[in-house]
Length: 315
Image (cartoon, rainbow, N blue to C red; front, side, top):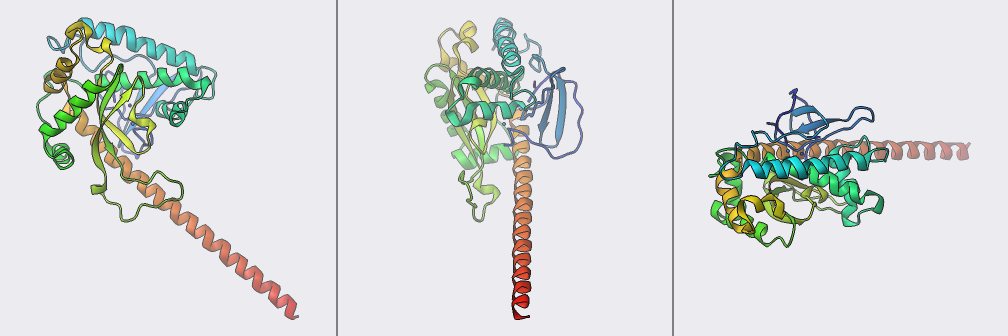
């Protein structure tokens, strides 16, 4: 399986691809995994990078004790070794022999979620798939010696869209701490688009896209909403922090942001999202031109046919 990941046997090459699900991940994940029936494999596409890896539970991109004393090895062994492993195993079982087999991981997320009206036969697959994706993304959102402040385009966009880095931190921490029950908080890059059939967005530009903070319940992630590209997440299910922080979720969130976040990963995901948006816009423009050319050809053919009929009538 993997949306941005670590110990993968990777092959990198230049080629346009899809990330955060055509829209949705030590590689950084915005991936696209594919599974074959006899041998499950995953192919993750992120920007111009393609990473292939055997579909299996992959370890975080660091040793399980590498985040100590902030996040203990015990937490990683329990959270990754037990919970994440269960989600991956469940996913394999749920898609085996179904129409979801052979789909990319992101496609399974979107199809099975079905715009919030999850199909009964896909409900378990949706939960397992999203949780597997979310956790791999979460591990890659952290690094030893992380935290601090981002730089470059990421910082500029944060300051543009939130007013300041400090205001962003406050908004992200509030989203994570106020997520009722289990769930996730996210920083995402949102395309400014009209999600309406036959609608065309006039005069769009890069400045129309913006960073947003969102929170999701249970297993849901922003991949299920059109035009949201996840960049960063924090897991606020209680098992993510109880061993180290007991029930002090706000303390866990603050230390995560101050000491664990991998801004390198977030910046990489941002660039992948931008590249995907450009690629998708190019494809949309090409399809639009082809449709217009086809329509023009059809009209010309109809006019020619009409003229021929008129000539026959004259004769």
